[in-house]
Image (cartoon, rainbow, N blue to C red; front, top):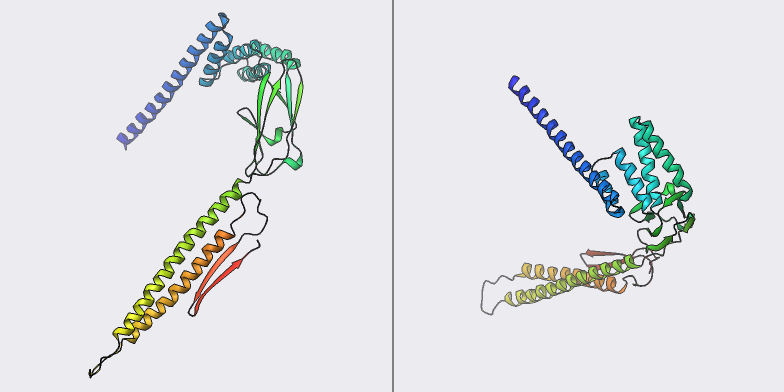
Length: 310
């Protein structure tokens, strides 16, 4: 037990050291990126500095990084992004009990609020189809935020509204630098007819396969029928032969097999033709009940049963 305990302790120590090392490397990368951003900001290379601060923040959340990032965003006219960065910095400072920098963040948030442009998504009940998704750029707007005010940056905002089985609705909204409120009314999405076309192709493919199997069954019936006739010829007794046994059982078996093959083959062929003819039209949305085809084979033959409305 002692060697086992020692081994487990060593493994735990190594795992802890590995995690600490990874966190240290991440912190070092974040610090290096932050320093590069500061140099670029001092050189008035605002866009490049913002990119460095963003990369640093992605590595590790830091209060100083958030404050610099908010300042950088504000200089480039991204008022909403700056407001959000200062809000996050305010929350981090409160957690760390850094009253001085919390106050700085609070003041910057208050100064930016009158300058914000705001966006409101108006989604009426008639437009709320199942699975409706509203996206602003790369971000999905949750249903709980529909009708609420969302701060946005100046510039072109890409709005995409989509739902399964419907054509997406896309609009590019140009947001001015001065504070304004924009309302985006989400229309009722147009049903997409492509799924019906796919079903048409699937039904016709099934028809071809079923019809092909039917032709094969009819061919097998013809072979069994020929074998039945041959068995009949071979079983005829020649004159003068005293002992002659007629092969009636073989003939009967071939005859039954031919009957079943013709019945099944004919049923499958008729089913295939029916599927091909009754496939949904490509340009019309299907409103009728789905077509069901059932083939039944009995001893006396076959039966094709169609159920549905067309």
